[in-house]
Figure 1 (cartoon, rainbow, N blue to C red):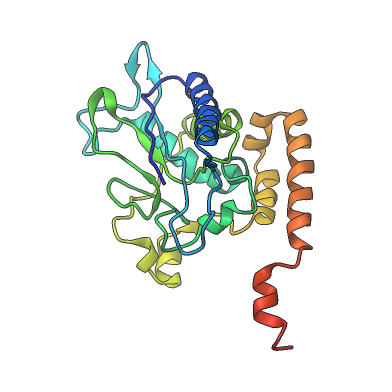
Figure 2 (spheres, rainbow, N blue to C red):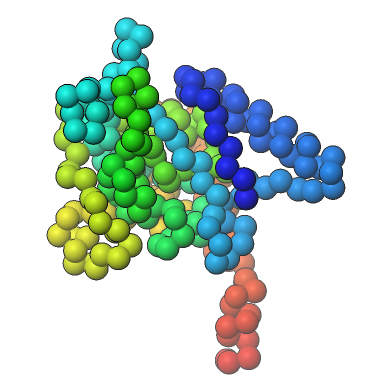
Length: 251
């Protein structure tokens, strides 16, 4: 695995760079007799590949997320944006994590977020606030994976955050303890929900989220659902090697 960091830019430029990077990487790998994959979880038992997405908004040329008077250096707009991401996390996950395999990465214990919470330092949370302040103030969404269409993913993420601003949402208190070590009861007490556990569940959550559906538009929604339902059905009806290893001799 390799971690590649892009210099920040607007959403469209960043999406263009990501698509170009993936294409160039595959071509160069092929020239050396190798295959570069952006599959989220190619190997069981090893951390998968994510596409951590850092976000901020600008207004009049200034970082709208910055507020030096705040403990975390975040403005009211930033907190509302975080609240929007949390509110729509289950709805946009089908877009940011669009493969059957995406949900093999989103499991506890492998450095990928599973629980819908935010924190300044806690990497088990869905949203993290990096330490940078001032013009570098931003939030990090840790769930997306590199199999997604970045144009759709960024549109869904921004729509979620902007809805939080529009509605004046307030995020719950940040979670500082390791969420993976919390009991079910502790998570319920703190109101910590989970991301969808499968592509099928993610599609149901997507359809139930009007903000994300509207952000995608009817043409994209129709084509996306047809493709993803066919993918899920093909996976659901396949007999996998694990089933043969587990059941063939026993039954």
